[in-house]
Length: 130
Image (cartoon, rainbow, N blue to C red; front, side, top):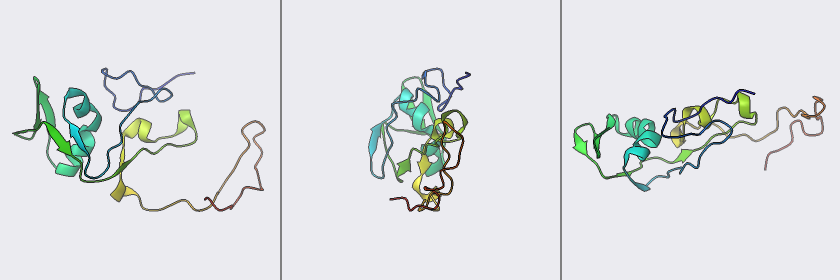
């Protein structure tokens, strides 16, 4: 019954892990106007890409000591969601995933359980994901 707060862990957003978003997911080359709300949402990935600090001073957005009005993303990003809403440590908790962090691709179903009976669905085990 307890709904935990989720990303971006800021009171400007009333999102929780059940009622999340909307969140724009940037792709390589996308330009985004930098305002205080976008700084909150994209601070961690911009700082990761640039290896610089992003912050707001009044109405001005700064990347280290440079004023920026827009930002062009260097990488593609993904929103990653698990199948257990209340127990999935995913993008609702830690934000967007940069494409270089993706190290594999799911190709087969490893486990399948019927939620109403808690019985394993053997007919789905090791089926190919298409």
